[in-house]
Amino acid sequence: MHLTLPEFLAHAIALEREAAERYLELADMMESYRNDEVATLFREMVRFSRLHHDEIVERAQGIALPQLRSWQYRWRHPPEAGGDEAFDRGLSAYDALRYARENEFRAQAWYGSVRIAASDPELRRLAATFAAEEATHVEALDAWLARTPRPSVAWQIDPYHED
Image (cartoon, rainbow, N blue to C red; front, side, top):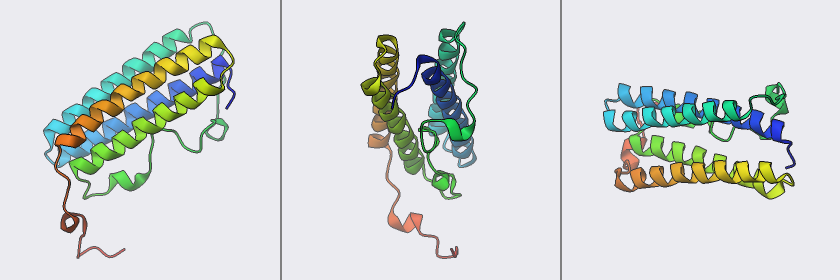
């Protein structure tokens, strides 16, 4: 995937905006389930995503960024957006953490793919830096997953819900 630096920055800004929105939704959901510890983690991830977003916007000062429409992004769906399956009314803390981890992993992989394809040294450097940042998020979520109990199969099956 060959991107110019302005295209890359436009994508990165959108990615971080989407990540913050999803983490906010997850935090609200965990709070509604009275899982304040995981809600606090997700609110911290909102803060990190917004900080990274703001850093990228600052880095892009003076660069004419393309105004991309949803279909013009170079991904099938935003790496940090995942699917709607995470917003099930019975979402456990473990599944929410797993969902967040998968989103962070996709973002890391996307930045890594840009780094590999880039011929511009600055673009390659930025993509590597952003991939490394996403890797720290993956590691943090892995640590949370390791200490969070998995829901039992019986917990995930709702005999009163028909699909």
